[in-house]
Image (cartoon, rainbow, N blue to C red; front, side, top):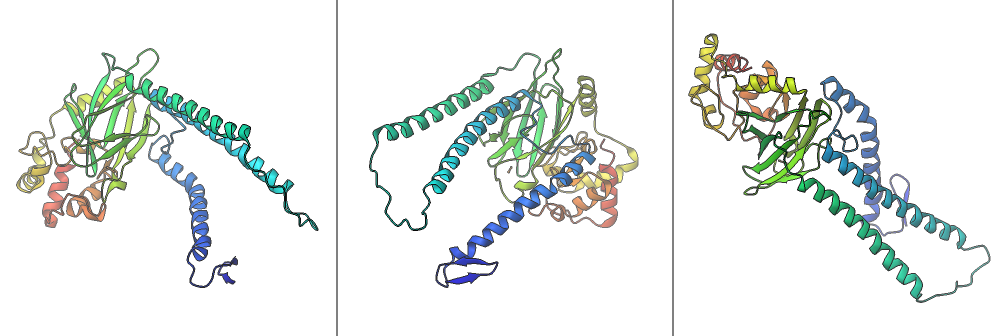
Length: 367
Ligand code: CUA
């Protein structure tokens, strides 16, 4: 017997691993839990500062599918909590009631087999699983069977390593990483139906306050819908590991009033800036490899490997949420995007300082 640092007593011989790992794992777990709880107000405050309504939270739904999912999760949590309370109460009661008492060294009676008990613990779990299965199947079916009403907004989302391409086929709008939607109200319902595609590997599209996760699979057309009932900005992210920068494949959903949404869409349909004062920057853009990967209205650039830049400055972040979209960050991003997002598929463009200044000045006009 020896004592592990931290005061835990182990009965393992020296060299045993599990006994040493136990307290370490417990400490790491406890630190994680405390850190998460302690930083929650900070993450909330940061999100609030940014004009963002709330941190992603599936228990605060503002859209029909997310509401059904919350109801289902309460049912599952309720049943699980009931089982937990019953099992742990019986366990603790047995441990206390039948503990060894001083002076009582006799062996307790050994009981084998009991048909009523065995039937009970076979049938009750089957019934519980059946209830959970039927409730889940009903919710899934309700969400999947929903047909798009004629006035629904249609959006195509294409997952890329590591950003989201967003296309509005009926509106002629293409953007990236920031999904703009109209709010749906009792008098004017306007759900959004999303077609999900992937350009490379499997991603998963998830905005906890609006709907559940849906995988985005190459060569497969998945569908989902949302119907936000409150305006504001909601955060989402890729929820399926898809490579080095999976963590920085973030998504913002901006829910507008119908009028604001129409204004936004009209602005996105405007031709990109052709400001003569930044002609030098536009020339830098058109003479470098930028044009192979990006699309920019009114230039020769028509690549789809990277985000459409026609209205770059209407977005609040760059690099799918890797940095805020400021002049300083934009210049640094073009200089070397890997400093924000190591492993990103955009190369450092190796431009000199005057070229970087000219190009940044041009990008800043793309409102
Ligand atoms: Cu895309 Cu993870």
